[in-house]
Length: 221
Image 1 (cartoon, one colour):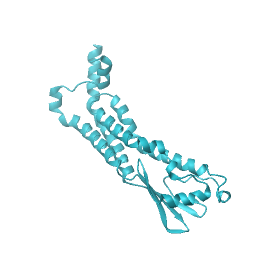
Image 2: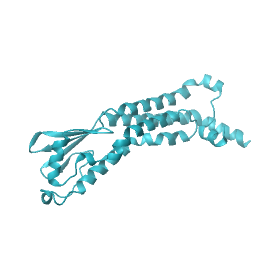
Image 3: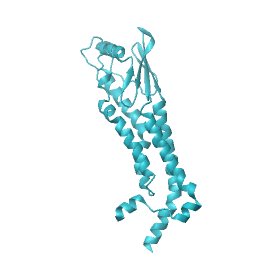
């Protein structure tokens, strides 16, 4: 094995050490595997829902965001948005939706790959999945701002509504409308996955750091 690859993967666990402290090395693996499973499950779960309260719709209108699609009262919301000059919802996050399933599967594979890495590089492999919930909210807020700040000035009611930014996590008010967002199970699964990754990294460091230090001591002697 090339020295660079060996350094990346880290030291092997001696057989006697593994027999004596098996759970020490199993725990981070179990935590990483659980995190990967939660991410895969999240693909088919809704991540975020927005309720639009409008005078002509007493029960409200809903749009639900999955990682690769949006469902709900999209036609009705697009109809209302058209009058204030907002673009159709289908134009939002097209790239993100097209690659999201592959991307999350890739993140899960990176987490699983980290179970075979016994060095600090395991943290790098899990970092994208760890930050996924933050990226999702930031990207969603970006598109809400993009749509709200780029209204068509030629729309019928453009003069009655100033550019605005619908908030991604709390209630917002726009003229006679209000929006109420809610995080759903897909997001919470990804957040749980991030928590499991953090716990896995803690136990991973506790298990393998002594082996790495011992390897360095032997190499310098």
